[in-house]
Length: 490
Ligand SMILES: Cc1ncc(COP(=O)(O)O)c(C=O)c1O
Image 1 (cartoon, rainbow, N blue to C red):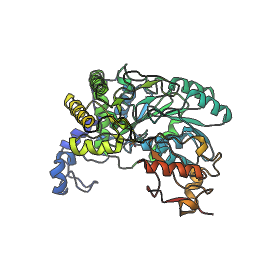
Image 2: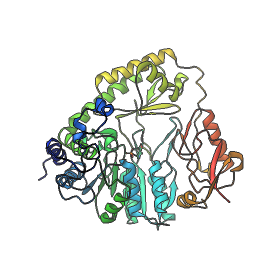
Image 3: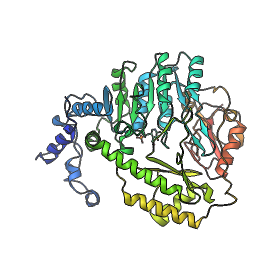
Image 4: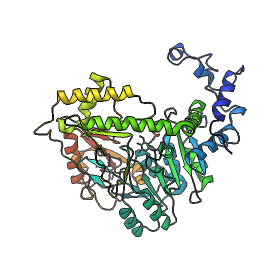
């Protein structure tokens, strides 16, 4: 019987940090003796005593047999997995490793178009061929949802030889697709469902949150423990169940994308975050939910503001559930954009959102937030609404969405081929009809318009210029102002 109150890894690290030892091993600061005062002034000295390498008592991340193995077993038990791996290079590394573990060069993988850029890295490194699926889109809120089961079923019929399906669940805004149905359809082809659950590490600890991916039938889930729980930035977990994932190959691919000198402070923080959730998770999340609900109710009374999913949540095929702790507040009815609002909130009120967008801003409410934080946010929003009374003629912030019409039909190159091809950087007008060597993704709605290997169309460029003029940010490309593009030479 596993004892969830225990913290084997933290305890071992604490013992080692407090033990006298004459260090002739890395790191070079030798338990803090050589650390610059510039750092100790900020961080204190204890942190450096705990910044230790793979001492015999501390086990080995890539061949765990001691305290790391115990800590990972406890995590698997707490998060509902058969096996869990601790990650020190974020969910980014877990996503890349999962793709490398399931797909080789030329293998097909079905992925939504609104994937995180780590998926594109995984495609480039593996040489897998992406079959991109269009997610559902909410034009009123300018939000990309999940892919629908219907789109997946159709695409798998066309590509029955696909080796895996990968979905994002939940999205950045807490939107959850019909994962149970998606898992069922995927398993009809006896292939694994990989879930980028970077934003859902808290789901297993409260019945009023959406179903966790593994419980809904996923084979592999990657969670950014650091995004919503109490572990340190960069620390994540990868969970597996069932036999559709080759676990030996996964252990190997995780070694490709992580340091051979994993940071024990990050690892210990994962152990503690698990213990905290396993022993107090229900209460902590109940408090978080209650704060989120208070915020939602108060926001609904502020003229010109609304939060996604309040007062009525209207499920659709691509959005069957919502993480209510994720707050997306629409500000465009005040005649200002989410980007402008972000600046005002930071400068005037010292309130900082997670993700500003054109029409709205997304705020993460988590176990670290307090009633005072919520009051601060609400007071700032009330003042904002007074300073920018709801506009009879709303600021022109039209919605935009890269529809299939914007895209050329069959990409001539895979992401990998385009990435490794010889490239040149040319002004936009010279790029039409050429093959893009980079990803061009406007936020909002965070759906790439061009992927490496796809043909640059005039529609795509027109669309991108329009969204830049409206204030969208372009990510992924070498020139964020989009004066020029990197294309395949030839
Ligand atoms: C949907 C999604 N997946 C994956 C990641 C990568 O997570 P990490 O920062 O833990 O590497 C992010 C990061 O923002 C994300 O939003």
